[in-house]
Picture: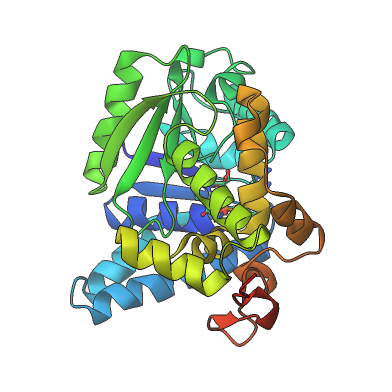
Length: 297
Ligand code: NAD
């Protein structure tokens, strides 16, 4: 298996293209706009420079990696010879169903179709194809070149052989593939999102301020950062949409998104990507917002 197509060249797509290309795979990277593709190549180049600066890559290996990537705005052309397609387009169920319907008709019948979705059912995605046994979740973590985990999600009909093949490919990328079944939020987000939601409830109810909640969780639990800062990194809109998938999928009130999160997303405060979330990021670094300070009640 050498030919890989990646659909979507955003935050995750460019990282996924990077790790495949650096490990010798032939990558076709697809996006709807040429601008997005050029931005992705620039990001990959910058991230490879970081690895060179740490002494873990040579200039020659960087050139080889970039040469392994070809960009396309035409999906049909990009995927026609692919052995594996990894879809990393925008998290929208209708969009993903359309993409997989197209992939089903554009790819070789034995190609494996994987999705990097954070929360959409792999079984539902597989249902629009005529090869549900060859559809699987390959959930990389952000930033892809750095994070070791790939959550491998078996849809209801995903075969053992395809699961083993995809686990093997993830190992070739130097990752740690870990299997789970297809239920709302899989494992990573089913556990992470309620923690983030509870941190937001703690702020909403005035238990503590942003800084205190993050410090207590960071130092108390030995997490690399607090849950509110992590929510700013992930994107508050993304957190909200995953919580809604959990809430609707399980029909359980415990996953209901905190009203403060709903309000912040409606106000356009989406975290780092919008410059304002639980912290302000407008100056490029984390700054505390006065209204989020701790007040004794
Ligand atoms: P993003 O918005 O950064 O990138 C999405 C890209 O998909 C954009 O460049 C967009 O132009 C492109 N796109 C949209 N429709 C397309 C189409 N029909 N064909 C080709 N390209 C198309 O989003 P992202 O953060 O990279 O997320 C991508 C996927 O990865 C989502 O399913 C998301 O849930 C998942 N994910 C995200 C993270 C994260 O931390 N951002 C982590 C794990 C998984």
